[in-house]
Each structure stands twice: as C-alpha cells, then as structure tokens.
Image (cartoon, rainbow, N blue to C red; front, top):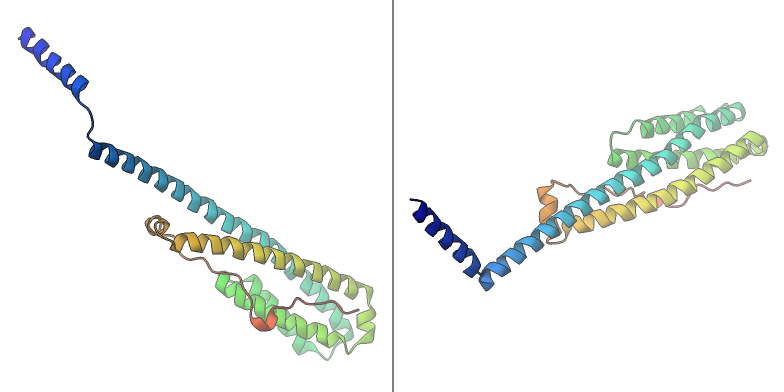
Length: 204
C-alpha cells in the first residue's frame, strides 16, 4: 500500500511538471484578470464620482444657506421704508422658506428660481424709495447678497460639471453595466430657468 501511494504521488508530480496551459486557457485567464481589474477600477471610479457629487452639492448648499440667512434682515430693513409693500415682502419670505424646506434637488431648483424672481421684485421695489437705497445697512446687505450670488454661481457650475461626468460615465458602455449592477441613478443638474440666468445686481 505504501508503494502504491508513492507511485501515485510520483505520477501527480510528473503531471504537474509536464502540465502546461493551452493558449486558450491562457487567453481566458488573462481576460478574466483584466475583466476583474476593469470592474474594480470602474467601481471605485463611480464611488469617487458619487462622493464628489455629494461634496460639491454640500459646498453649494453652504452658500445657499448664507443667502437664506441674509434675506430676513434685508426684508426687515425694506419693511421700515416700504410699509405699503407687505405683499411683496411676504412673497420673498415665503419663497425663502420654501427653498429652505425643499425635499430634493429638483424641488430645491424650482424653489430657488422662485426665490431669485422674488428678490428681483424686492430690489426693483427699492428703486422707488431713495431713503432706502441710501441706507447703509441696506447697501451692506445688498453687497453681501451679491457676493453670495457669485459664490453660488461658481459652486453650481462645479456641481453641474461633476454631475455631467458622473452621468456620462454611467451611460457609456461598458461602464453602464457596472452602473446598473451598483443601481446608480442619473443625477439631476442644478440649473436655472432662462429668465433667471442673470445674477442679481446691486444698483447704488
């Protein structure tokens, strides 16, 4: 029995020494390794892009919150000079509150468009009140709001650029296969209506 075991062991060793992979097996093995490498690389790339989308939105959200914080003070100053314009002031505050309580990016986008429109009405209103336009606090808040608007514009451009990269990679083949496996959904752009594309300008 010992001799038989040694004989079988010898055969196994000879088989290992003499065995060599066929060209087809080599091709299949290399293909499997490359496919695995591509999967891992693409998977990690999607994770990085998804994190960049979230990070860029968070940056934009910080500037949006700064804007929301400035609006009540601006409205209070206007109220002291334009007591008969309560409807316009209420509309600004309502639009601001709706933007703050938005449930998702699509809703936020629509509410921000409405807020921008109401703010333009507010600044147009101030043109009829020279004393209001000369108020130092009003002027300061206008300048701060314009600076925040510019920050929002730059943050929005970066966010949309990252979203475009993500969506393009998600739709292109063969990375689309991995995107479907990861159940990745198309990201929404944070764009604005054509009528709102110009920033609010300060007129002193």
